[in-house]
Length: 252
Image 1: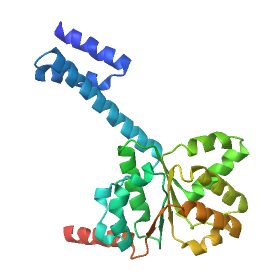
Image 2: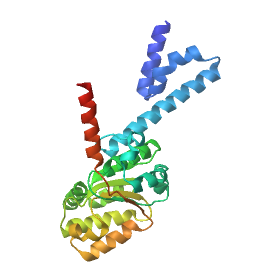
Image 3: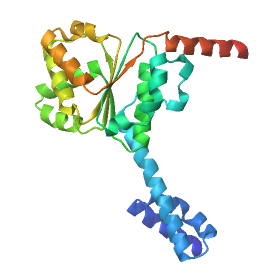
Image 4: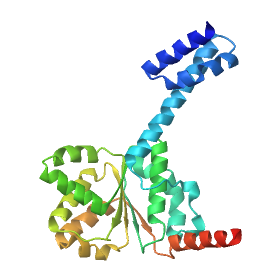
């Protein structure tokens, strides 16, 4: 009889989408001293379950290319300026304050790794995050403009707590792309945070925007109150590859 009752409870929980209760009520019954304690523990498990699912959803929707946590970063491989500013960035106060972060420097120094790690931590703290590359973002904006869905996309875009826009400077774009990018990033200025990684110093941004007026306005909007991080240094990726190669050689 008890087995049948438990199966009915699980079915009710499935219908009501109370997965935390479904998965834990039998165990909690054994641990609880009274009804109040049982109910408290059961609801606590349900909350933990929902929090876990919500986090998985935020990370999945952010579309990170891979998972990287701050604890995974090899601090001694990062450029000196990032090492000194990472503790401040890790508090995520820049998101709360609506400040931008711009990481600039030569390729391979850990810009993408660090931005993803900050994005993952933001997801863990309940922030809504989007990861994209600049070329992919411009392509998406152009597609929305051609299908007359740009306004709807812009409304969603400006609501993210943190946008991580990777790879500014790897590919140049036309005037339409520059104007669309400027327009959408401006929607977030001083209200929501945008983290940009670039391999170009600010005085070279005109090479990709092609218009000195747009370039000047873009630099002005993005750098206002921003945290600027100099990522010039030795290749982080090369060091990681050499370390993995050395570890493989030791195993052989």
